[in-house]
Image (tube, rainbow, N blue to C red; front, top):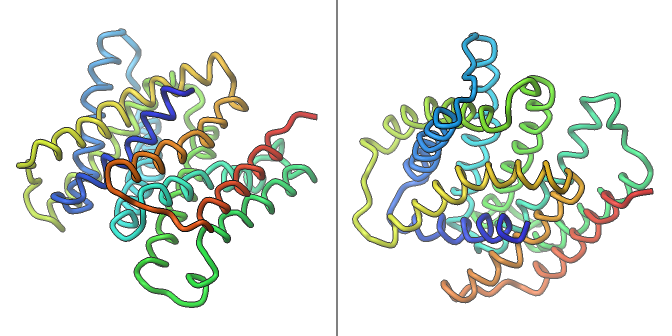
Length: 281
């Protein structure tokens, strides 16, 4: 879990660095295409069965849009205008939104009193992190925060879609398939909006792409499924709480970012809400 939190936490820094040279859609195209190629290699090397029916590939395409295209794009766009650590804090709201989406979609995921209390506490934390001044008007910074929260909501919807439509697939195959679907969407989109997909010139941009595509996407998915298998979904949720401290620290050390005290207080309240939701008994 610590390794996974470190990989994902550092990915926020890598994205921020790459945004210095690459437009958003081109960045996301690099992320999903390289990761898809790596996971195709893994699936073929392991001899895992690749889906052959159109219905499954349609579901994987939808998953790629919900879990990759929409959140990667919204969060990368938002990160141009807000700090790395703050992006990771709003990303942590995925767990809260996931509970709400699951309660709305699945009969066995009802919103108990404990879960509702955790959701309300967590949303209070998000509101504190956004700040009262941001709630009073819409500027680029406010829109960026809303964009990142929109990405978190897309992740939550993707989790429900995966449970409903992709439960019959091996997790590694599902990850490969959704990234393939995401690539089929992002490449034409990046070409249409940004022009020919640019190859970076700066070595640090290449290093950033290598990190968020290879480690932060392809490797991280494989590692995440390993954590799920060993620790269970409840403990795996704790990774969500470990990511922001990594991202905040790296943003401070490498980029000199400083978060407002309200953002740190908001994350602490959000963390309490997540722990209340996940408490057994």
